[in-house]
Image (cartoon, rainbow, N blue to C red):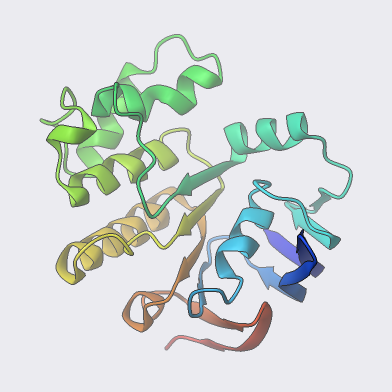
Length: 224
């Protein structure tokens, strides 16, 4: 599903050179739930951004469904995300002026679907918010906002779900609920999931854990 071939990302800030990701090669199978675990600054979020086309590698290639993205323009990445990739962020990234229902509908509207209501209602029900669709983000708890974000990420039935610290802004109980929700819905929908986390307990929900430190893979293992 996803293959990274010697992927590196270097930033220059003034006179400083920051090697955020260094020579990462990695393969993620279709339907796998992979956790990329590491401390703040380890490069895990940058790596997730490179996989989703939110940033570009300095070196190497991101291969998705057997297709190289090396020559992709921004329009190519935009189309790929609209059709094949869903993203869940730590800070929800919901539009404050829209209701939960309208936030969830956005990916379908951006794809030009004229009648997204049925699919939106299905997704709100799947995340336990069937009766909260008319509420704006400010009227929802943090856990409810992240549930809306999960529904939005899955509403267009992507093949790949990227989750960047999806529990990082939640307390431990709600965080466990969210990671179990992501895991359950992804299994039902057949999605491949790559999540970045600093939390061992979250990572242990995955099929496989990749450890990152200082921009490089520092080890990996398969969960029992």
